[in-house]
Image (cartoon, rainbow, N blue to C red; front, side, top):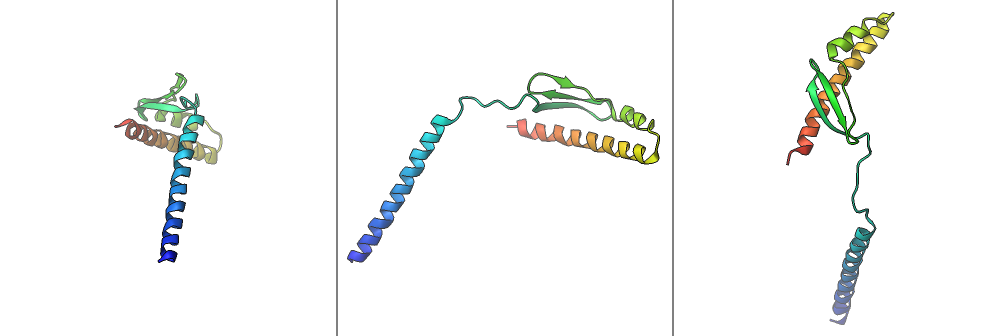
Length: 113
């Protein structure tokens, strides 16, 4: 009986100690956290448009860029001298516009409540 009582007391003591440590640690961590976190200035906050009409990419700092449409970018790829360079350029353009479309969709989901 005494052995069971000691094991129970030990278990309760450890459990209470852990609970107090977590509670005190959580409260202490909150006092060290910064008041307001801001993302880096170059963080993309919105993407509008499509590959046929062109995209607009807006950043957290208020700046934005507007890349050319995919047809304009692909036309510029035709100006490269070698076939390998033209194929590489076209592949990069397709991937760039595919990724912009996926980023636009991801931002829509992220901002949706």
